[in-house]
Image 1 (spheres, rainbow, N blue to C red):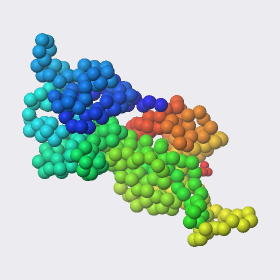
Image 2 (image 1 turned 135 degrees about the horizontal axis):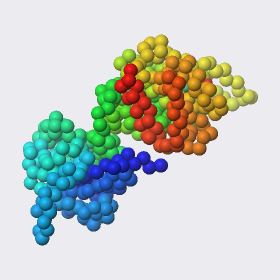
Image 3 (image 1 turned 180 degrees about the vertical axis):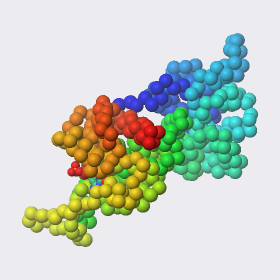
Image 4 (image 1 turned 180 degrees about the horizontal axis):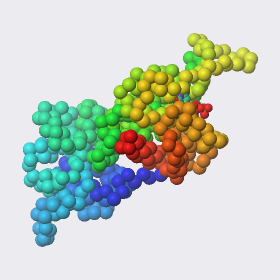
Length: 402
Ligand code: CTP
């Protein structure tokens, strides 16, 4: 399911003369897939690496490069594109273009556009590691950050020069995350501390076996990403999963339910919001075996109940907003409403494992959100990120009204 998080958004993609310019095609596709209208503006040097035909075919718009094109009367095109843009993304950005913008130089179409526009500007640099660590370059970045330009830090890895180090263009999903961040209107979550739990816990039986569940962490990770895009300070406490931690999120990896409880209790005092999306194992084995249990006859394991983490949180310090999840297979509504009350939650997101589009490991979910005031909203099948946005909208509304 495609999210189309940039629907009705106009994005200028500025491309400059770095070898990473070849990646601009993928960036255009990513922005278009998210629903954006994309206009490409290049420098002269960018077109030494990539052709206008490729860029125009993918963006569906004419590539703009010349400030004063011959044989054409184009009235103040830099102003009309500056007004058209909801955001300007420069990817890849060279040290040269960053230096020019930082110095107020506007000697080509792209730099003039940046000077003329009041849209947020996201800069994704790509260059050799000697350049990316150059103090003059770093000073220029600092200056632009002071003026609210958003930077997407370069990645470490093999560079075109053969060297290995920082300087590679950031991953596409991180660039997209920063574009979404730059487009956010003022959110009440900005600067708030949001604690999110995700994934399964594992309860070891012996050094080679454990009890766990099918949770993949996708829901909790989506909540963490949506919250960081809104400017929250996000701490993600996660069981063992195999997805990338969203850019800007502080991640604490845990194993057992007891580890998760400890990590959450360590962070809870400062938290404004706790969203418990983790599938916490309710039981652990009573006696862990330090040696591998050898196969003989049937094996009986005695299980002990784990503590309820939300309960422990309530005993220590209740954050302003507390959100839980309920994964049910039967009597879903009754069970969810009981959990909402018993765990003293503000919201509970109920999903039924047997509903089409819901369940573990999927990219979508189908949820009804119950509130402590008795209201309920049944949402259609939607992407987990889309659902994360809905949950955060409710959290924001709660902050505004309470
Ligand atoms: N939860 C928790 N600590 C536990 C178990 C669950 O904090 N030891 C949280 C979950 O993260 C979720 C909510 O409580 O937000 C409901 O979890 P769920 O597994 O649906 O319910 P349980 O309370 O475990 O009850 P049951 O397993 O009987 O449905």
